[in-house]
Every structure is written in C-alpha cells, then in structure tokens.
Image (cartoon, rainbow, N blue to C red; front, side, top):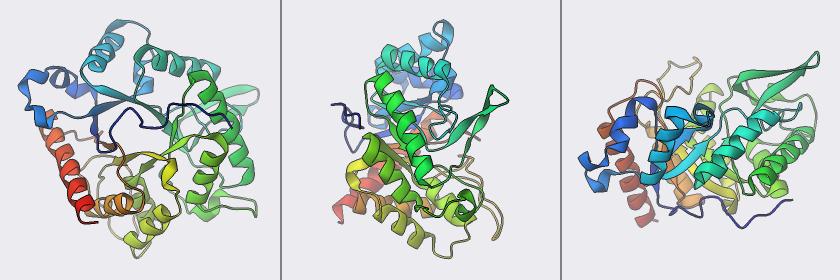
Amino acid sequence: MTTYSQLPGRRLSPHAVGVGLRSPHYQAALDMETLTTSLLPDFVEVHAENFFAKGGLSASLLGDARKKYALSIHGTGLGLGSYAGLSVKHLAHIKHLNEQYDPSLFSDHAAFSIANISGQEIHSGDLLPVELTEKSIATFEANINQVQDALGRIILLENICTYVPVSLLSTQSNVYSEPEFLAEICKRTGCGLLIDLNNLVVNAVNEQEKRIDHYTYNWLSQIPPTYVGEYHLAGCALVKPGEIMVDDHSEEISQPVWDAYEQALTLIGPRPTLLEWDTQLPSWERLLLEASKIRGFAQQALHHE
C-alpha cells in the first residue's frame, strides 16, 4: 500500500461547502466583488478533462479561479476499474493539472472506461459499472497505486450510479456488497472515498427499494469514517414508480438526499461537501444560495446530535 502525508480533504475544513464551476458561471465566479462574502463558496470543483489544454483560455481561466478559490479537480475518465489498465496519456494530463494547480482535492470514479479490443485501446466515454469481485479489487489496487505514485498524493474514489441490478454485475461467487468493496479498495491502497449521496438515492430508486432511507443508512453504516474525504450532493429529475432514474444533476437537492446527508453526518461526520448542478443550470447567485442551504443544514444536523 502506498502512503502519503496528504490526507483527503486535509487542506479544507470538514465544514467546507463548494459548488461545481461550469462554463456559464465562469465570469460571475471570477467577478467576486458583486457577491456577498458570506455566499462565496469555500471551494469550487472543475472536471479535469475540460482543462487538459496546457495553454490558452481554459488554462488562464483555471489559473484565475485557483487564485480566488480553493480548488477540487474531479476526473471522469481515468477508468480506475479497467482491466485493460490506465491510459498513459490521460494520466499524464491528470499529473500536469495536479502539478500546475495543486488542488485541495482530486477525485475520480469507481468505474471502468477503457477496454483493449483487437489490440486497440477504446475509451467508452462513460462511467461503466464494475464487478464487485476480488479480481476487480486487484485491478483497482494496481490502477490507483499507479495514479497515486504519479501524483504523489492520495486520491478520492467516488461511488457511481448503476442502471442494472447489482446482482448482474458479477459472474463470480466471492461478491462483496458495494460499500464493502469500496472499503476494501481503500484499505489496500490508502485512497479515500468521495461519497455521492445522490448516487445512493438513484441506485435505491432503480433497485426499487421500498425504503430509500433504510437503503442509504445500511450503505453508509458499512463505511469506516476514516476513509471518507468528501460528499457530493445533487438532485435529478423525478420518475414514476418502476421507471429508471437518471443522475442528470438537473434539480435542487431532493428530500431523500437531504435525509441521506443527515445520516452521513451522524454516522461518519462532516466532510467537505460539494453541490453538483450540471444541467438546467440556475444563475450563479441561486447556485450559491442552494449551497448555503447545505451549510445551514449541516450546522443544524450536527447541533442536534
């Protein structure tokens, strides 16, 4: 296991609240003088793959944002669960971003994205679910260690949404539950977890769980708190019973996600928390008001413990 002194989220207060910085909000985010100081986020998150260019406007913008805010860089394409291994080129881009901008957090997903087909490396362009098996854990171990050795720091691993029953994701008998699986990866690699609470709710809906709160509580209670470095909160379009819910980050935080956040604060404790909103974006001002609700909610939940 690789160890580093940089613990997940160590450079941010566990009570920090951030927002995803998306292109329609770039100018407003950089024009901080127009905002009430109390509404400013503690950090902003950007998607790594949008900033791979080593020069030009995107690099200039990220540099300006880094001067004004603490920064989280969130990868979507490393494919840490890929049996085919990592893309050397992709990892080089990730390393450059980390060296250039020194983010407080770096994260990617517990998914596979890369396959070797007829000798050619193919990237799915999506976050595909993995088998919850020993073979898969060994793959994550090798790939995460490669990334952490390249970056010289701990990374965070995010749980993903799946749109098929978990029982169909494995062909072997030694199946872990998802939280056991993620915890074992952390144990072997020293990486941390980014728990996306909306993803838990989406999976509960798609599994047709009758009590979403029971599902999320059971999931969270299996995670050792020391592994958790960050939370993501989001909302998505509602669906009718029996329909598939898609994690589209298009709405304000739903009540089941608030409930799961309260469970996480009780079972695990406060961690840097990000509001994700990627489609049907509100104004920058409304986004910050929504983020301020997270801060108030956490303070009240922790006060009542």
